[in-house]
Amino acid sequence: MGPRLSRRGVVAGAAAAALAGCSAPSVPSASVAPVSYPHQDGVTTAPGDHAVFAAFDVGDEPAPAVARLVERVAAVAASGTAEVTVGVGASFFDGRVAPAAERPRLLTAMTAFPNDVLDGAWCHGDVLLQVGGSSVDVLDQVVRRLGEGLRARWRLAGFRAENTRTRAGLASARNLFGFREGSGNPDPRDTELMDDLVWAGRGSGEPAWALGGTYQVVRLIRFAVQLWNRDAPARQEEIIGRRRDDGAPLAGGAEDDTFDFQSDPDGAMTPLDSHIRRADPRTADSKAHRILRRGFSYRRDDADQGLVFVCFQRDPEAGFAATQRRLAGEALDRYVLPFGGGYWFVPPSVAVLNDLLAG
Image (cartoon, rainbow, N blue to C red; front, top):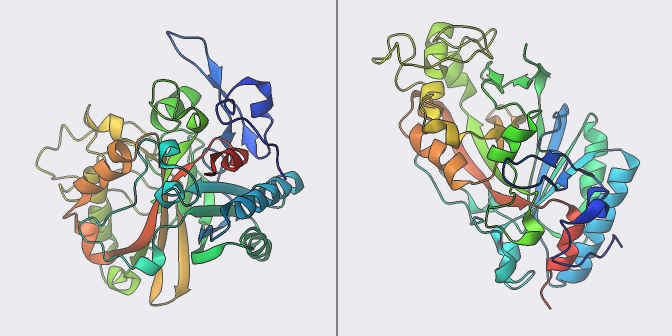
């Protein structure tokens, strides 16, 4: 079994930084001494070429099931065979597994947004495993092993076509619509920015055990690829708001350049209903709503392919939900169908899960 930590002591001391699968960057502050919190891998680390997303329920015997999961995740981390990130959903804290008093402050079940057609069989879960690496066969074996003793809810494998980096060194890939994923992402190498946007830290109001964790949103989105391909590339670029070949914004400049829409109030260059403009209108207010995206394409067959949209943030309401509400009515709506996913909290380390069990 993995190390048993006191519930209120999991975020203190150098021992926490050495937990399996965690890194511990310093959290700078202008008013208080920096505090080092552990973080799980799979959030700010560079994405691999493949990932499997698998949601489970803990079952009727939570304590042994969680203990086995913690032990197995530590073993995978020690072996270096895959990068495992574990999140827990709101149902983990319904008293059946962990007490409601320990629930992260902003953790809820995902609700439907406009244009969603959610299928309950593809939503939620007590636990979410994000398992990344370079070999699909290895990832399948790891997920199978980690999931033993848990009740499977749903599972979807993803890949990152042309998995590379932008000119500024940010992770990038090409989605099944032919456009680059990751354009405009905040820089995960900027630890101060990640403290502001991603990690739950001092002053967040989160339970002590959750400090250093983050909220993960997963959205399973089916793409109407054949319908999309009927449109000319110029029309596709208007819908997205970026050029297809290099990710450069229609507003001008290169992919990673800073820009705004002040000189284009009527949408002559970047249409008002374009994805980029709705998602982030580049106003002073929208800066607080930025999220760290880490998506993967998926393809089950020609009729079922699309995007495993993944994002991390310190506040899912101010981050993902605020952005999603702005997207309602965007031109891209007719080509996409969100059908599943959920909200999870990624704790600072997997080991803390042992201490959250009720009873």
